[in-house]
Image (cartoon, rainbow, N blue to C red):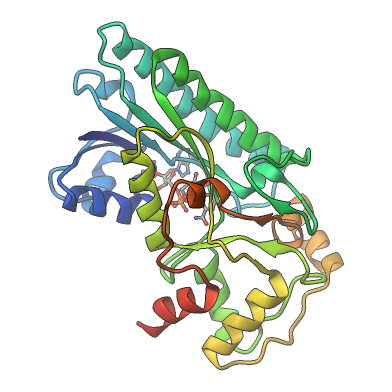
Length: 301
Ligand SMILES: NC(=O)c1ccc[n+]([C@@H]2O[C@H](COP(=O)([O-])OP(=O)(O)OC[C@H]3O[C@@H](n4cnc5c(N)ncnc54)[C@H](OP(=O)(O)O)[C@@H]3O)[C@@H](O)[C@H]2O)c1
């Protein structure tokens, strides 16, 4: 298939592009910096800095992962706008492309579009499936806008899948890479009460489920992309420390995080016991269903 990818140079996108190229797909990658992107992408991937540059290429599928890093900077009002606009603007362009291609009966068959566990907001101890009503807060509003923008492609006959992603785990990036240094120094520990849930997923499972959702023509709508056994922050912390053979007693009080990070502290202090109900119902098999299995694979290498 000819697959248009946004965010193809990222922590998820880069190995995804590698996997798709190895499976024989043609890649059309949108990047803000095509010259640097070419060095990161598989040989043969075409790169452009706008979505519309690929109108002639007629992509048959779209995978939309681009966006400013959620945990990169403190959430000032300006940064919140960047978080929203960096997702919504490119998604709107993708929908425009779908519309243009639909005029000549060549709309892409499917668009997988990013979203996150933040869609649900703070859910305390509730068990969360795709049916669970969200809690209204910034993370929810961000994901809601991103999802609504993507859903507009349905009007052009495109199958739209919304991938509500948990913390993607691998050691070369994302949350785990940030945690490894302090934990290796014995400075790790839970955040706040430690009772907040951290839905997580091994990156290999993330790539596999994206391929699964791409191929399964009967599936659309929201899918929780996280392992079937989420952990609380305290359990996650203890498991990581055990794998690294280090202590994890350095608890960080909630008030310290709130002063240091402002509203962004919510990312660390709240969460959702998110379950991949629809993926399991559809028959997707996780290679790494437990955190122990995931960390053994990641840290054992
Ligand atoms: N990793 C996780 O644990 C996780 C969890 C939940 C949800 N997600 C979501 O899944 C998507 C992929 O995750 P990821 O970890 O692979 O993301 P990432 O590495 O942080 O970034 C993905 C790509 O987005 C583009 N990008 C970055 N800042 C941008 C900006 N200001 N405006 C436009 N484009 C920008 C970059 O591509 P170019 O430089 O080539 O333009 C970057 O390679 C993201 O949207 C993320 O929010 C990730």
